[in-house]
Image (cartoon, rainbow, N blue to C red; front, side, top):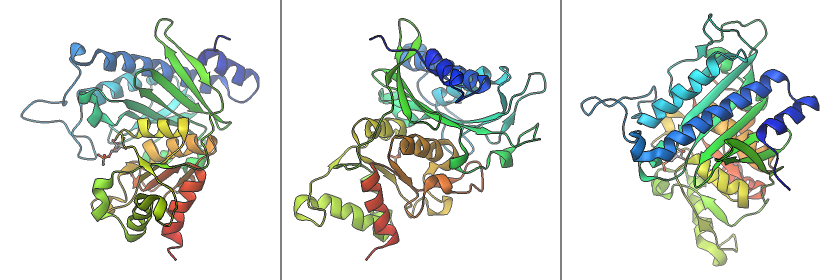
Length: 339
Ligand code: F6P
């Protein structure tokens, strides 16, 4: 049977009373922007979009002090431009922008807030490995007409929608509206995202982990012990062999886990302790945690549920443990109950 399009999926959700027209429009607009980003990425060196933003003498940095790639900047502009004028948003915030961006007065305003990481895993762009876009949708607090940073500081459990697009061998959009997690594949001839997996379920157990093991010496003791036990394999305390995969694009690693199980961990370490972690709570951890929980997986900071964290700042960082439910629980137990 021919798969249904994202448009039809969303219209059916609206007719069933699960979403309103504004949220439907918002998701359609984000999906359209992701198709434009996908086209730019697909051109690679031919499109002149690879490499660092700025000039050879002065590389452009984002608010986190990281060098921006040309595609980081371009993807941010595409999402910003696409979402500003449709009337579905009150404001938006991006990992690549210093502060939240209220919708300009020239345009109609809606009641949603959109957060995004325009291009996650951008160190992989120049080597032609999968990257992605992550997004999260919140309600704008009542009576706020000009949302600023503080209005975005809502726990992940308040998200009404989250998703990501992975630009890999095929371009896929994975989405949750709080009623399961669904995957759509871009049909390049038709230019439409088509529903190819309804209600993804992450296997509860796994023998696969995704961790940047080169940071081992910087980790806290419980994380050191947990990974040592994984590596000990069949003859160690876990009694089974584990395989390791690390793409270094969170979107690609999470997509693998949604497809066949696994656990993804970016823990606290001595290098990122002062910042609170490596990954961003609002642009990476929260949307991915929502998507993973809706697919039956677990998502934790290593000490508590990720979606319950009360954010303190827009660009806050956090340790992330997510994936197969039972394995996440084991990893967390090493931290909360070392005995
Ligand atoms: O944005 C952060 C990110 O690029 C993630 O997509 C990825 O999981 C991680 O950083 C890679 O970290 P590292 O450079 O330590 O491998």
